[in-house]
Image (cartoon, rainbow, N blue to C red; front, side):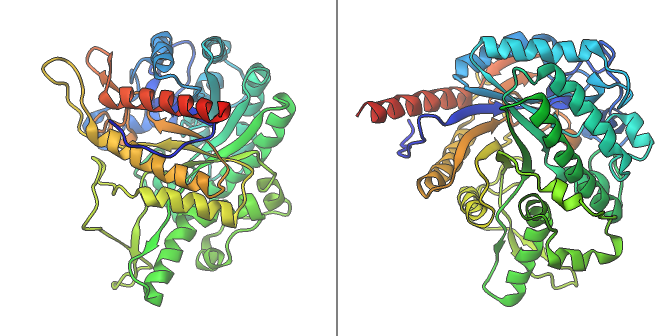
Length: 453
């Protein structure tokens, strides 16, 4: 059994996270439009094994069963995203009532089971029709996103108390538009930078809309952040780690919290920067109630001897997940401390943290995953140490409730607390599911005991 000694505050929020395209399925039902991920998956060679999210976990039809799983876990909250093409099949204009009805019922059922909905408005499924018209590199997409946020928050804003505007704008910008590994598959640094700026601008617009349509709600954004460590104390390695920090972290944190892009990165990208108009940075830095962070690993960085700015050094003494990502729990602790010190967000949530491992069912049908349990425990210990040092961490969401469609990796990589047999869609709670359930229960019991004492 766990030897976990740290204690989280009694009001700490325990959750699990998902995303619409990764779990919902029903991609052609009830008037849903095509997304860039539908198109990307249909393009040969883009997704492993030709997989797609057309069925995924079939959450669209099975969410009642999955809420039962959430109750068994003892979750306070469930983070999910809304599929933009389900609500506005043409990206803007006509609202699809059936699409909004689904999320309306989902929110009500969560609340009826004592589970708070934490709603992400954009988790990468841009309507394909908007991509065809220019996509995120085009400034006009900001207006379409604002229209979508207006429609969703007008319907759900009376019941949803926590909104996340965007998930991981760095991934959308660089992995989707700079390097082409994700939808829409563009390969342009200029498109990546324009996408990043327009995502941030649309975030600012969304905050204003949500404040109006969902008064009293908490509004934030989720960034995928890591803590780059210099491989040595040489000036060259330190400079390389700072470059990676600028690319991964500061390019989004600085405009959100300081109203400016970092000078060193502006200089590096001067020739391909998108237009930044008067008022843009003021809008981007509209105050938010919390910062969501997704953290899985933290890189060790050295100077690149071949003329590049940096290279990632493989550590010799750490475990690795099935993604090849190094298990660096101190990275989460150091990241939380750095955010608190340098940016002072009002509150922080770990909105994703978890690990993929090659899970298999045993002869008795169970799924034993001690590596995932050890991973979660070590990262939670790091988070608890940060809380003890004054970081305003308010909650933790394990990624993910379910094995799901893992983007370009298809169904090969399993992150879930619950095993999905993708042939039958049977749900099988893993060992980590029961570990997390017991961990949450023990934390609540200890917190109640502290309060009584």
